[in-house]
Amino acid sequence: MIPAGELRERVMFQSFTENTNGDGKVVKTWADVTELWAKVEMLGGTESEEHRQQVGDQRFRITVRYSPLAKAFTDQMRARWCGRFINIGNVRWDEAKTDVIIEGMQRKGTE
Image (cartoon, rainbow, N blue to C red; front, side):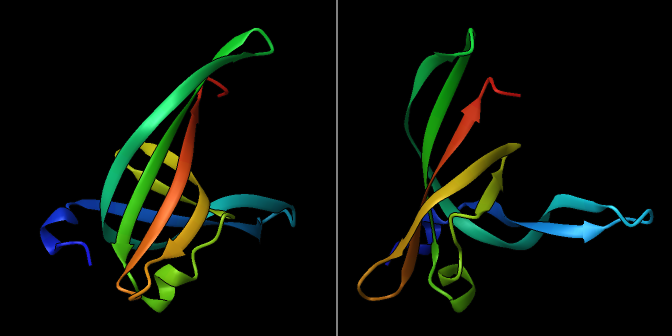
């Protein structure tokens, strides 16, 4: 179990949803699911060129306390932390089911 003192960051987890606006059109948006205390680690990144544009990928590991809600996180979700949007790639939990480990990536330069 990760020590409570290492869970210093507030991270908002979001899911992709579809809603209908006033005109009856389907609008795809990100909706907040829950905000949790977490340990956020930057794991490194890479840079490349796509379509004559420089892009960078930054990898992250986010650790939160195990809960049924955190266990339900999927790769169809993202995390919002300090103005960054981190696409969730992998979700796993430790053997003792005390922590959920989320690995994700932020892509820059494709906006």
